Structures are given as structure tokens and as C-alpha cells.
Length: 56
Image (tube, rainbow, N blue to C red; front, side, top):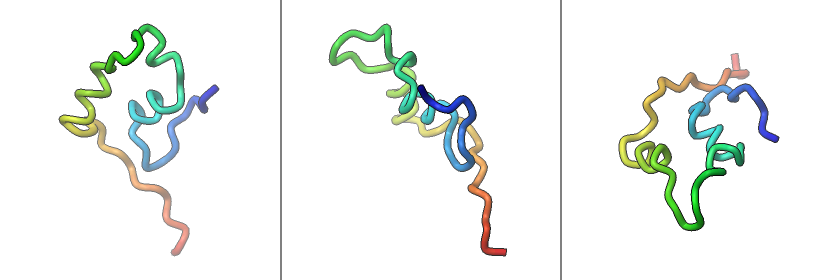
């Protein structure tokens, strides 16, 4: 089971689709997810916050 909150610096959709099997459950074998294909072609639609810096 995936974590419920998305870590800092990660796109929420990318994180969910990579770590949650329920996202692709209804797809057949060798069938592409339309949301993932759109994401790969057009990029992440979210403004992804950067990871917290611990240097300063």
C-alpha cells in the first residue's frame, strides 16, 4: 500500500500512479493508461514544490 501523502518534490499524479496498484487496475494487459500517456506527452500539470532544503 502506498503512502497517502505525496512527498515534497513529487507530482501527486505521478506518485499515485507509480505506487498505487488501484490506479491501473481496470486496464487490460499491455493497455496504456490515458492519464499517464497525457502526463508523459504534456508534462506534469502540477506546480511541484521543491524538497525542503536542510543546508541552511
